[in-house]
Length: 349
Image (cartoon, rainbow, N blue to C red; front, side, top):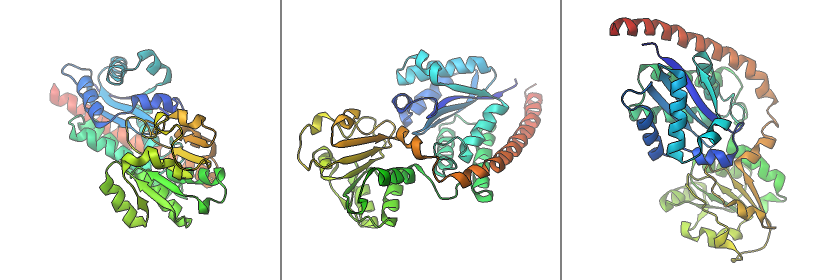
């Protein structure tokens, strides 16, 4: 039996956040999906589900690429309760060498909204580890993802593709500077203790912003960060009553539904000063109806595209060097894989 590498997915370039949030994988859905596509007799023999705020991709080893694609689309539609025709409209698919090259490009940051970002490599590693723990990874995808992580590390140490540490949090911060005047005197509210939330706090601290409050559903985590960064905090259930007290709000949580809502904040207390809300959560953390209020400017993660090309000239110059490393890595992987295929077929004969 000859196995092929294949992937199907979508990203911020193909699907808006309104679509991506509907197909985002939490752990429960990830396990249910893996169980569905890897059932006995399936054409899919191995699988890794990769889901972030900017992309959702499924990598598989299969003995029938066309059948695997159909199975994955059916499973995605069932797990997420979305229309299959909608999925087909936003999905891309690659097989064999193209699938390998795409994963290596993702791990290297070439397919990211922020060219060369560092966070994506950790997300690739985490997705691989979680699926390995779930038992959906064997020798093919094990080698593929370990190679992608190796290449991702290599390009960041041998090229300047990540020079400047431009991340979603730093791009968000730069956008805040563009949107607000006299930002040093603004009261800032950080919702969530994710890496993006911490990154935004650290960026704020470097700019000597002192009036920062952290809120998190798990109050112990908010308290820990508030002590580390000398910030304030309050109880999560007070959020909708108190958010109007702040000028800038950065929301980056893994919540499955809106945590800042329109209905709970019709006229509630606090000032009527302009409020800038940066919602980088997927699914979105903030009810888009809030953005229709005159005093509120609501920015979603897709709105960050407009400034990701600024100050990235040096990174653009590194793309050719990164692609050369990726090409060599893909050649090495397929040399290994073809040798192993002959060995595995001989062993099963």
